[in-house]
Image 1 (cartoon, helix red, strand yellow):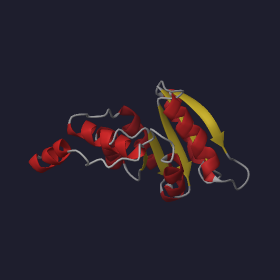
Image 2 (cartoon, helix red, strand yellow):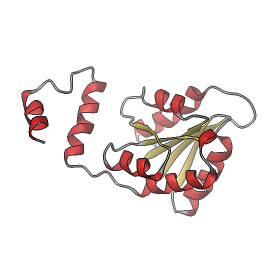
Image 3 (tube, one colour):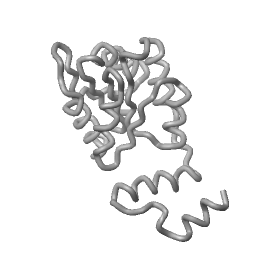
Image 4 (tube, helix red, strand yellow):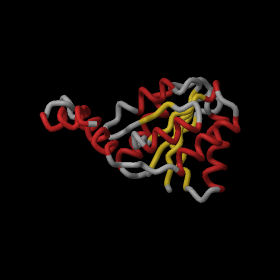
Length: 162
């Protein structure tokens, strides 16, 4: 799997370890921008990763900054991106299984190296479950088009019956 990678100055060390882990597990990391030596702006790193995933250059993306929040917000502005800020393995799996997250955002300042490694491993090995979650992901895509996701009566009826 091709995985685009990006990090600001606070995520640079973590992204190097993630690159090694991905390569060791047979994935192809695609470095899209890692700021190593100076303070930099996380949107400058988030955009090329999100764009690579959105256009199909990469299958998935991983972004790392201090809190993960800024990267997540910036990446989610790109059409087709479902970036998830994740703090543990359970949420890594759920973000893939239920939300089909295609960009993982990690808070380097809040997690240790081993936890980050486990999060990445869980995230890349977990597949999207589909089923009722597919409808929900389609509704996210409807929102991207500027439309109300609950606008049809069929959607309302399905929600009531679940």
